[in-house]
Amino acid sequence: MDEEAILHELGKRIRTQRKRIGLSQEQLALVAGVDRSYYGAVERGERNITFLVLYRLCLALKCDVALLTTGLPPAISRRA
Image (cartoon, rainbow, N blue to C red):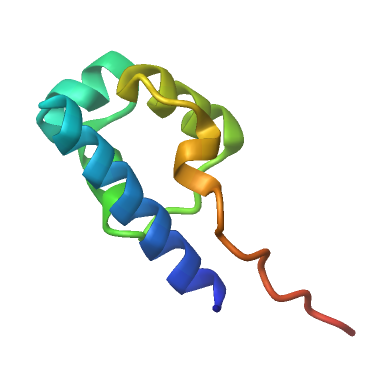
């Protein structure tokens, strides 16, 4: 799985959890303290978010980081 696919999968998992708890993108972005358009890009897998942003999203999503990341393979290392 390449890095782009990993980001898409993470975004999909975040979207699923957001819908599970019944929040709109705008509501979740507000609670997590991120810009709504930035959050939309996260769900689409277009942003490589920092751990701290992921943590804030998980607080807003009322879930553990592990729920969203378990089973994601590590990024392919690039050798020089």
